[in-house]
Amino acid sequence: MEGDRDNYYLEQVTITEGSEDGYQYEEIPPDDDLSLPDGDEDLLRAVQTIEEQAEDLQSQRSPVSSQRAASHRPEVVDDFLRNFLIKMGMMKTLECFQTEWYEMMQKGLLQPEAAGFVPDLYSHNQMLDEEIKSLRKEVETYKLAARMKVHYASYEPLLRQLHEKYQTVLRQKMLTSLERDRAVGEVTGLQATLKNLESGHKIELPVKKGSACEHI
Image (cartoon, rainbow, N blue to C red; front, side, top):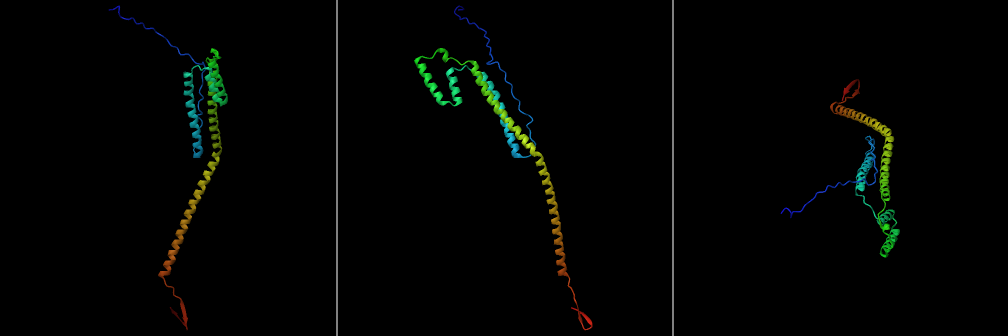
């Protein structure tokens, strides 16, 4: 019975994950000083929108870069060329390339090394090119936010001056309103007094008749 049993062996295998390119990428920290004072709501909302877009780009760039490095696989030559032509918008050249490529494959004119994989250097350069474009877009966003911050700061003294003028005019208007109400009250009181005098008293005028004075 023991001879009929199968023998099983366990073999320990160590899998090492090598680096794709050996390059280290440093993240650009967002500008923490991009804070604006309270004031114009429209301008503040615009700056906040730009900062939120910059933060979104920063949060999206790092996962995409790590995902590309983790999921990078060797790319065959024809796929590499197709992607490059599509990226450049050269659709006519792409059509000609595909036609001639398939014709050569059917005729057996392509050598094995011609249909192999693209060297890692070209793939890495393409990844770096995409990374540079993303960084340039992010830098432009930060520059726009900084320009708007400086532009808003230049208007701050003017806004403060206008606010002070507004407060002065408001106080003057309140004083004028109080003076007007007091004047209206005084006029109303005088009118009531005159009306009472006219209705409550009779005025007697002296009339001369001979040598004696009679009253009406």
